[in-house]
Image 1 (cartoon, rainbow, N blue to C red):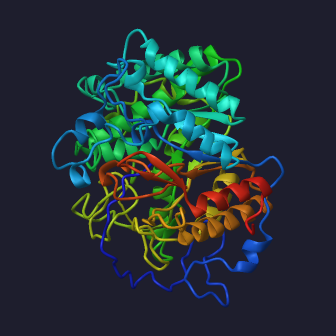
Image 2 (image 1 turned 135 degrees about the horizontal axis):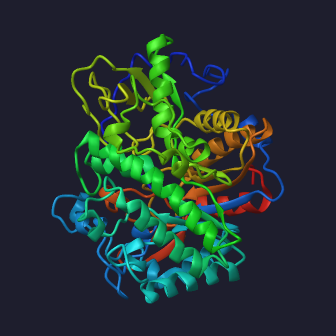
Image 3 (image 1 turned 180 degrees about the horizontal axis):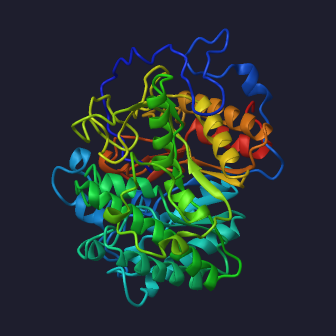
Length: 513
């Protein structure tokens, strides 16, 4: 999940109320009778249907849920180091315990079954398997995930495994981190270990969660561990991650004949700020870098044109023959959706990185994000904002899914994350957690997804972010995305109204339940 920074609501007068000229689909327009910008009429929601066999699920991540940060031989991760550093996390908290899912997973999987879930996306902690990132596996770590997978299967839930959701072994960061090309082979070894031990039961594998964020947030923006700020390191890290994606793909396939390999890419539809050629080109560069950089590498063995001028291959550490290594076509495409972006050209800016304040939120700035892509991307505030500060814009998932479908010859698509942050608290007297805003967010977003499916997109699964309120990265415990309320004082779980609603949707394949 993404590192979200709270921010003051800003006015984007140049965007608000205007028709956005898109590089794809047709222009966003306000439907007649809409009361809220970007909202979906009830009539559309009431008609929405999902196909028989559609897989409803939830998504989670190891560091955000497991706790047990130093138990059973687990090594230190970069997130352990980060959260143990004073001043890094809101409220001075850590993920040392989080939801204690390392111990409470049978209870959580039973709750997922109660909510009629058929797919459970989880991640494995690399330092739990290889404490220093290399060498023989830690069998206690493997045994834990083996039990976890068996419990999912016993509940009739498909285990969906992300190999890496940001918790790099600290020992590998000490060797240079993702800018160090050697990590591609280390990661492939790790992937092979997992597929050998779990590949008889897991068929759904994704090497990385949000590889662009791993590279940019960790090595350029410096807002996530390891908190480095070097654009060349960002480019080197991106190339290593793309190589690692493909090498892991081959390792998994070699170890398990049942394996299918896909992705869990963060994506946001990019709309040009104006209809100028420069802004439309900038939006295309955003799409190439943020949305499909790693997808294109896997599918075609080359990077898309995300740069101004010639691609900086030398800085990236690109070597002859890397095209063949990068090529590892995915069996299906996984993507996240939260909100949209408005993109403008900043290729003539003389400053870089200005105003960047988080993965999901970039403030308006005269600066370019970096000297290589020459763009400025902002999150508009035309629609309402969630309490985590993200604009609610359901139409974005339709535009994004249909664009990916067209560009990649209608692949199978799985929505790997999608959700919203609201701080609704329990009604102790009635034993429930009313969170009507979350229900409405899902109703509108899923209605737009159903429309994409009706228009031909081969979407076969949707994973809500997330099952439980959890540790929200640098925001600590100040943001809640779960369908289930977690009381972090005693680890009590309470299903929210949205959880009960989502369970009915999963049982009926319709939104009016």
